Figure (cartoon, one colour):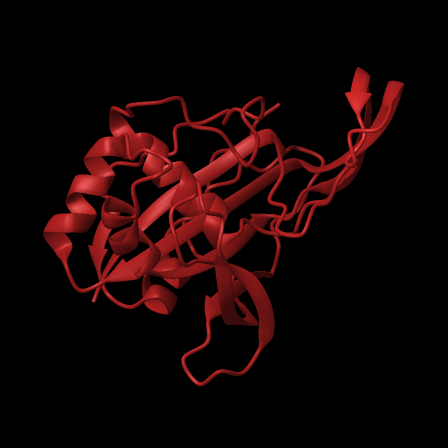
Length: 226
């Protein structure tokens, strides 16, 4: 198996899968639909193009929580909002948008076609469209592309041995372990409805199962910052 690594680090991230109307939630880790959408933006895949999106959707995904982040809510207002039944207009609507502050995730996508994953890796270095961490306004603070991010090995092996992508602050201590979430092969684990089944224009998503476990902190770490 070949695994492609992505570095998702930013001041704000949001990975919602069940948001409705004026309440926009976020999961505690990147959703598969969100990550596939990010890759599609890098490769210039149109939102109506399922043919080119499907190979991305077939990849197996894993997430390592290098910095879990803090759940925050942002309240926004919008004017002249038409109701769902189109019978009235709300002069001012208040919406709540949840996000993760100061989070950092190492995401792995695994498949058997190394050439394809190399092409995805190249697109991340020179993306067709701007890349965002769940919402267009949530831009990454560090490049998603990393040198040597296409590696031979299983998701668990590659995610478990890659150096820590977060940076230790002087008032912090290194964590003893990190949380790792992997797609389940036996149908056990937490059910998530973020598996793309069609183009993003059609917005059809299916189920997948994710199992989480704690793994040892990798030996190599980032430099301490101020």
